[in-house]
Image (cartoon, rainbow, N blue to C red; front, side):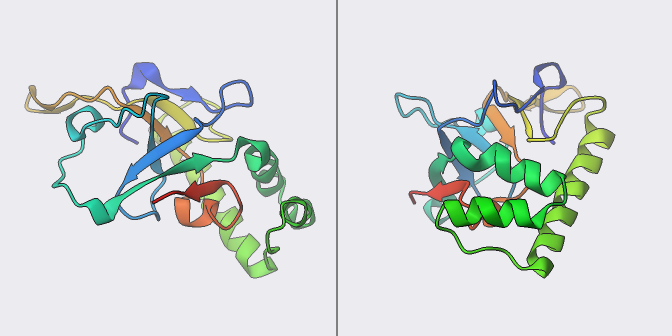
Length: 168
């Protein structure tokens, strides 16, 4: 998942998503970095991603921690009625049983992948940590160190659930 293994922590209500996020690449991804209160954006080197600048591929926005944990709980508990109740209170369209099955399937895949790639850590609400240094044959190619967030659902699922707002 691109983390420095010594930095990984589970996202929790006490250790929530950051207010602001930044993503390079399509919104259909699950990896985000933080944007500091002074607006600092992490470099490609700090993110450990080789990339050519493409302003069309940069997205910045905010996370809605007010509903995030309840939405993830409903998905984890396989409770479409609970999820749709949260959506209704937020003024968001409810999800169909087919959409819910897809969302839940993606959530379970993430949890299973986290167990395989990370090991014994609670990834219920996603993971936080620092981007790992990228080495090839012992030679450092990218330094890493950026704060990284990996959510259990990709941005294109978080947005219609009212969790992710895209500023641009």
